[in-house]
Image (cartoon, rainbow, N blue to C red):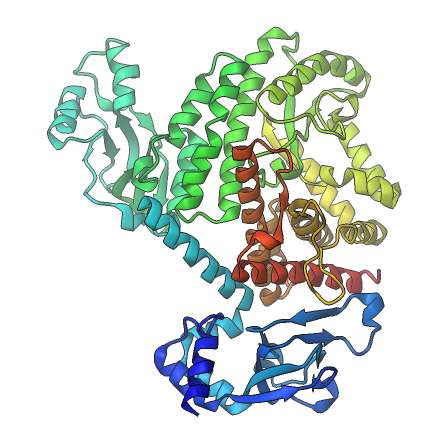
Length: 623
C-alpha cells in the first residue's frame, strides 16, 4: 500500500496543479484517490448519467471526449486528454451532467476522487481551487512563473507588473515654480539628483526640471541663473498613481518622450522614477530611443535607431511585461518613427494648405504590432467634392514617398497595397464614408474578407476628429445590418486553429503559422462582436472587456479568451525574436514539438478557446 501511495505521489509531482499543491492538501488527496481501469472503448462519463459524481485524473492511457449529439468524424468536436489531465471539472463545479462522453481511446487508468472529497480538497487548497476555477489562466501563471524564475536568475530583473510605489527608494526633491535657478541647481547638487519637481501648495506636480533641461534650456541658451524655474521647466509632467504597474510607467514615458515619471497618491507627489528604476538591467533606454527618433535628420537615421527595438523589447519581456503591453509599446515606438518620417518628407512636397490625417489600419490601429510587421495605412483629407481629385493628386507623391521611407525603416510594403500611396486609400472624408457604406450594405463575403483590415482604423497623425466621426457612423451602420454581421462572422471561420480530429495539435512540415492559425480567430472574433454591439474599442483585449460590460459576453469566457490571446501573442513575439537572431523569414511560425510539456498543454488549450469562440459565433449567426 505504501509503495502505491509513493508511486501516486511521484506521478502527481510531475503534473499541474498537483506539483504545487499545499503539503497538507496533498496528504489529504493521495489516500482518497481510487485507481480504476477502463478498457479501450469504455464510457467513463455520459450526459445521460445525471450530475457528475467523480473527479478523474488520467494516470495512463488516453481519453477521448465526444459530443454525442453530433457526428464527431464530421464536426471535429472530439478531442483527446493525456496523462496528467483532469475532467470533468466544469460539471463538478456546476453540479450538472457532463456535456460530452469521455471514452477510453485505449486501455486507460484513472485516479478518481468522489464529489464530496473534490469539494473538500478545494476548501483545503487555494492552489487546487484556483486551478479549477481558472484553468487556462492558472496554467499560464505557472508558465510565467517559470519564465520569471529564469529571467531573475539570468538578469536579476524586477517585475514590470509590480506597483510603481514599490520602486520608489527615496522622497522626491521638490521646490516651488518661482524658485530661482541658482537655488534649484544648488539643491540638485547637494541632493545628488538628476531631476527636481516643481509643486504647488498642495504638493501637486506642476513641472519638472532635469539635467537635459539644464543643458538645452539654460546652458546653451545662456539663461540667467536668477530666472525662476517655471520659465525653463517642462510643465505638466507625466504623472501616474502609485498603484499603477511599472509597465504603465514605461509606456507613459515612451509615449511622451520623457525621462522621468512623477508618482502620485490622490494627485499629490510621493516619488519620482526614471526609466532605469523600472528597467534595472537595460543599458539602452526607451526614452533615449524616442528622443533619438524624434531628432533624427534622415530616414536612414530613423532606420538605424529602430534596429535597437528588439534588444529593448527583450529587456521588457524578461521583466514580466504581458504580451499585449509589449505590443502596445512596439506600436508606440513605430508611431514615433512614422510621425518623424511624415515630418521629414513634408517640406519636399507641395502639400501646404491641405488638411489631412494619416490613418493606421489593422494591427497598428489595434496597437498590436509585433517586431516584424508590414504597412497598413491611409489618408483622410478635407476637401469639397469638386476638389477631391486635385487634392489627391497632390497628396499621392508625398504618401508614396512616405511608404517607401517606412519600408526603408523596416516596415515592409503591404502585399495587398493597403497603403496611403494607393489612390483607393487616399480619400476625402465623404469618400471614406461612401466606401464603408458600400462594403457594409453591398459587399460580398469575398470582398469583405479582403477589406476586414479597414474596420480597425485609428488616427495616427493629424486631426483625429474626422476619423472618430467616421468610426461612429461605421459602428451605427454595422450594428443595424444583420447581413453584414453574418458575413463578417462567416469570414471569422476561415482561419481554423490547427487541432486534429481528436484535439491533438496538427503541425505541418514548416510548423504552425501562429498569426493566422492562432491569433486571427481571436482578433477577427473580437472585431465582429465589437461591430455588432457598437463597441468603440479597437484593441482586441479592450473589445473583450467592453463586450463583458455590454453583457454580450460572459465574464468567464472573456477571461479564457484574454489568457489564450496573451499567450499566443507572446508566443509569436518569441518566434519573431528567434527569427531575427537567426536571420530567418518565417517569423510567425512555431514548432509545437519544440515546446515543453506544460507549454504544449497551454498551446492546445489556447487553440481550444479559439475554437470555442468560433463555435459561439457560428451558433449566434447560424453558420
